[in-house]
Length: 176
Image 1 (cartoon, rainbow, N blue to C red):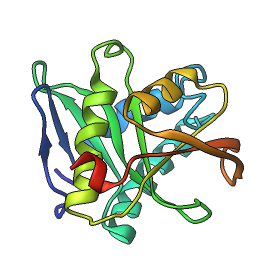
Image 2: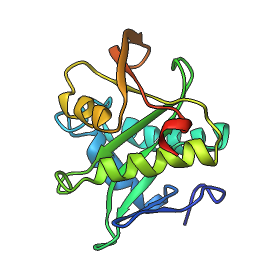
Image 3: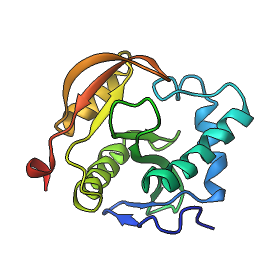
Image 4: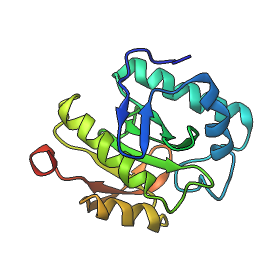
């Protein structure tokens, strides 16, 4: 059962990128409660708070008309991460973010999903710019942002994460 019936389904060669469903909650909760894997994303100490983050994302979709999609591996049909546009209260501007679940690293999932979601943000949502907000110690995300063409712009204090680096993605004119 989709929780966001108006969200589109985006597809790539290897991925189906769709709205969150109730059955995705355990995958996201497991990720958020893993202190090592979620360190650069903002993990949760307990299942209740992780569940609230999952439902916050559903609410974010209804508030803004966009949010984090569930990324599904086309070959296995399994959720393999989340990727989407995030802009809660206190954020400097819309951000494209990504997470890859345990067992799906090293397959290009985040890169493929982020490229497709960025195209959706520019073509369908008509956003003029996107950032990625990355904690300074998250070298993997910084490498991915650079691979996507984003450039470091500044360091700022994120209301949820503390010190954060803002990476600016190329605008629609450069990637469409």
